[in-house]
Length: 325
Image (cartoon, rainbow, N blue to C red):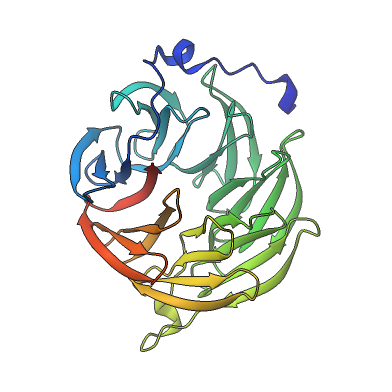
């Protein structure tokens, strides 16, 4: 399969009979695995303003090309729901195979790359036809998926193999397997795309990969006073809007680390809720939204001071937050 020969993705209106495009709803959308729903939080008041029912065990979410819709992967339903951001209703379904968790979209928005943990594969779906068009074997228990800014590669983390698999999106072939830390989970690119940062949940660290040389350049280890290394379990990661700081959720350590990208040093630790995993940054960069999976809430952090502003109950076992501001 070649990128340029994929069927053209229909417009949102043609594909799912969607209403007029909506942007900037000034809401945070948080998936709740146990409530089978998405909680909406008003960004001005930081109050819950509603709930959107969805398929079972919603986890990873991402806005579709054009930002009018939200794609929600539901592990127990084997599909994604497509939520219209104007009406906050489900418009349709896209099959994603057994137990989908994390996905990313191709640069043109036509293709979804989905980690299939049970299959040990990266599955590829055409969103217009709603058909699976490829499957690439990778290491056991793949999770994190990240498409390069130029769309030419997709990176997949294997939790058991402790590797990052680099796949060419034109040929759907693995071109490199990169050893990293223990149990790699999620990814974030540096601002210029020259580095890919991957969190190592059982390694209490982040591996920094050169996207040109496809090798690990450095390992950033984390420490939290009064906690053992086993309690520091990095998963979620997000880049600041100015590209200078990488935010890393430290899981069971109940903190988020602020890491200077240039020096790769931790400059601050923000106290948040239990099992801090999912992260998202506001458009102006002033706030960091942290989903806490074991305390069933979301902490909003002031990025200038690394201080929590408010913690909001957002449903049982929240997984991912998407900011629409």
